[in-house]
Image 1 (cartoon, helix red, strand yellow):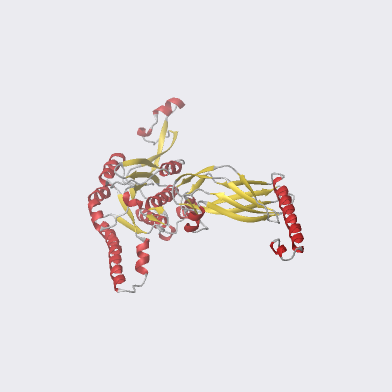
Image 2 (cartoon, rainbow, N blue to C red):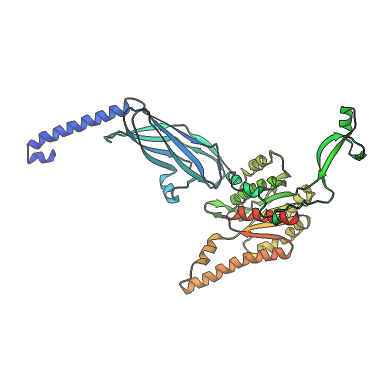
Length: 432
């Protein structure tokens, strides 16, 4: 407008008036936004996140302005947490930010925005501040508020899956006609209670300490043991570093172990844990006490893979030393070819002689997807043949394990928890 004033002098006057009006509006906008503190915001989320699951995060924003405003909210999320609504590319470009746009009406109005985060690694992470950019309907000036406080959260193995599979733990639809047969495990008994002696009780069951306190004969009462021990043995060697959808095979195994232990305890079995690589570094005795799941979760929280080769002989020596009762051993590992399995087969056979052994290893989901694609050239035909050879070798490993009296389960990371639970329930049904 002012530029046209060189040709039309009267436009200079119009331009000055418009510029003055613009400056007045800018100053008015600044006064409206900066004359008071007009925004409050806080974050609401759990202190513990579940690894591999969608975890809810809520942002609450309150306007103290007496007029309507527009806001742009940016939450500084931890870099290692995956935004379940955004692509990985978008998250990389944003650098761990999650943004929302809202309009707040006048008079202490409040808005809540929700989103979900899916962690892919266990550990401790920190949220940053909540950045709120505010402007009026004029949109000439924007004010930034830094709200909330940095917040630390811990990512634990997938405890949300426990509720998902709880129905399997109490359901009887896999048993024959819904009839339970009680398994008698030799002459093993479990302590039940102490009661007064009556004629006919065995003398060897008298509890002399309780009798001395009560000044009358008291006896220990036992009932037949109906539970079995279920140990989840997790390989932490370099073969478990392979990732699928951002999570390593170790993380999938940890999540499946936690769910299986929960189901086992609900089915009145005892759950234990062994983690090993070059040596056994975690051993949790099997139990079904009320605090057992918390003990297992606390020990699984800090597990990491190593870069060495797994020593299965050390696993056998330690289980032979610490487990004196025949148990169900669920071994999570990953054999990529027959040669790897045959190298460890002698130790697996020794484990199988003392325990019921289930070896769980993984299909390559990406390889299966590639095999499903049609070949379009001679080179692709050759590549498909090689890929099918690798897939067939995995299936041959299961057959070889079965021939040596060892149960084998080949599954994808996505189906791991479901397949392991179904296999456990099948084994338990066959032993009842």
